[in-house]
Image (cartoon, rainbow, N blue to C red):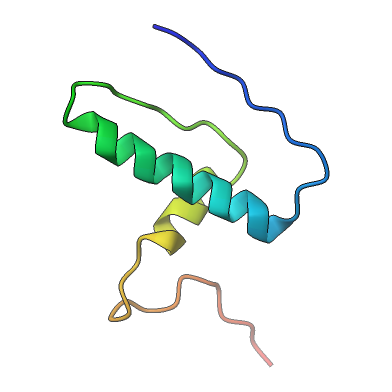
Length: 66
């Protein structure tokens, strides 16, 4: 097992989400070559779930009651 640590400074939420989704895309692409990449990052599960949803699925954000 090899481990890489990425450190980011002054990254906004949109950039963070894009970075997580790009890493997830790379992980999926490399899986067919036998490489398993695990992403352990803040809110990564939620970001990946939101980024992989289709237009037919309900909105994943919690509904605010008025």
